[in-house]
Length: 338
Image 1 (cartoon, helix red, strand yellow):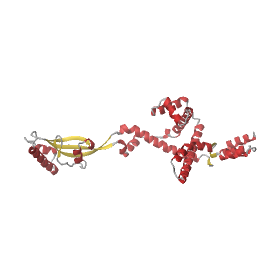
Image 2 (cartoon, helix red, strand yellow):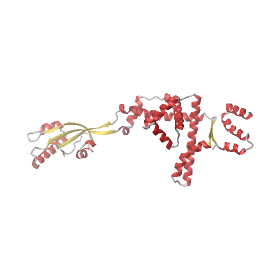
Image 3 (tube, helix red, strand yellow):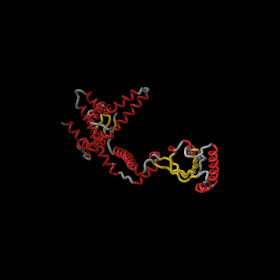
Image 4 (cartoon, helix red, strand yellow):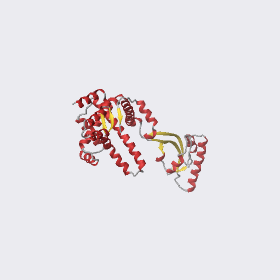
């Protein structure tokens, strides 16, 4: 009776000390078997306000990581370093979890069975799972459905807490989304396309070598005139005659990959305003002018907005949640005893 009164008093007035001393009192009250008290004290690895984290709990959380580390065949020194780091990281995660659980209790946050069911259904839908295949997957991981449901409820509760403390305070604007879109052209499939015009003379109907050579020579002269400053319209009018009709004008915008390899090779290094050489194509002899290079995106800003908003939102929430946890740690009573 006296022991319980002392413990209740200290939990109310001296939270951190109470959590540790309570274990000491239990040990003192077991004179018949002092080893029990020593074992209990030894098994406390962290005190988080009024909650304790035991060595057994930590070992259970670390166990899957240890199995993987042991299977990697590292040298003993390296293995010890990795194990120490994993235990440290896992313990910090457990402390953060205790802190969030305490906040959930403080705000009296609850989750209904329906909310848990909906969360599980979302997981099943996202991974194309039936109820049966989900249970089979859990069984392979050594997790019962009841345990999975419990974890899902904890996740739902934490999500409600995060929404209360973080998400409700995050504001994203259209300007934020556009700035991210403009700053990440590599993520949204920007492709350089070539805006082209051309001059062309179709192959002569006779198809004899001398006629084709004359056509090619004529195109060579046209190219010289173009490079000297004449426009495509001017050369079309000046060089069209009864022996060869010169055609020319705007062609449109094309990606390099969509072009015939011979044309692609002739155009790939051109700068806007420059002409290619005379190219023999399936349609006739052609000269191309690069009007401009245009960058186009496979995803427009409108198409990408929802995706960008989700990413920015998640990044901001993660940052703010980390900061919130740091502040929560700073005003909490935490003692690591391992």
